[in-house]
Length: 335
Image 1 (cartoon, one colour):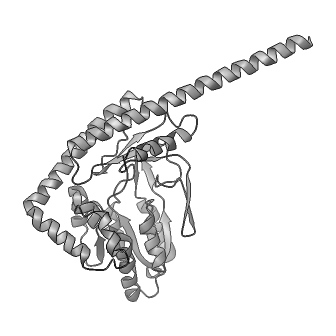
Image 2 (cartoon, rainbow, N blue to C red; image 1 turned 135 degrees about the vertical axis):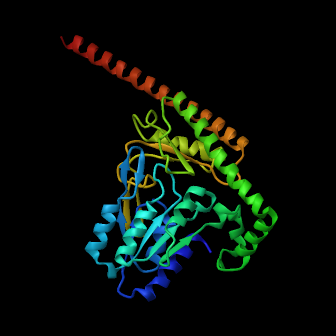
Image 3 (cartoon, one colour; image 1 turned 60 degrees about the horizontal axis):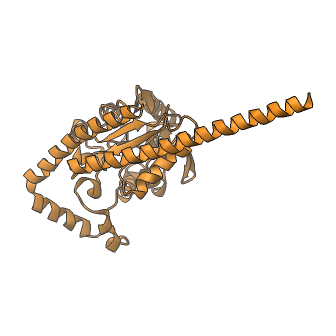
């Protein structure tokens, strides 16, 4: 099934074990389906804001434990954590969260949608294995299963079609073939990181330091966002129309309401991240030529946006100069 539906069923299953529970403690990640899954299951999400450590957004463990104590363990259905995510957010501190859950007798559900393709995420999962832990995984993201396959089975997502597609994929690849893809993905992550760092420095930007995120990278867009966020959103639009669908730009201060809950700074996983940025990720199946083509198109888009921005600045300066001259002439005429 789709990840959100799988999470919903996990929460509904736990409802029978914990009839008094009405809250789900959720370290914030700005992704709609995992949030809607809690609402759909009939529970009230308790959003725990992340804390900024360097460039990274990490789990606020003290806030999680304080909220458990405030609500009472019997009224908390579970802690709903996440592994794979867009930088600068990094995987939740699963080991520490597992300890908190064990101490208070609370189940721990881990959204591991993209995490199977990352050895680091899977290591985190292995470290917190317990009888009360549940993990979910995405077929589309981790097993090369095209999301287009959902079209004919979209009204019956619990059908055998996804399982059959995954079986065919694994049989055709074999164990060694899949491990080879995982190894290549890790190599592509390093290559993408190096190329994106070079490009960011060429535009007086920088690659955010997020060593705990093994899949996603983020590059600042401070120079574009200096005057207004329009240039940032324009860059995102240009990338999309050039078929660069894996990258996304995150402007400052965007607001989004999801199922009645308003999130400030939506997509950045926090209310006030210091700067706008661009995300890029290394997914399974990516090749060197894919990275090169992405960097080439991003470079062209940045040049175009910068050129238009400089032209606007020149036009504004010329207009200001003309206004000054008009004011000066008016003052001279009146005197």
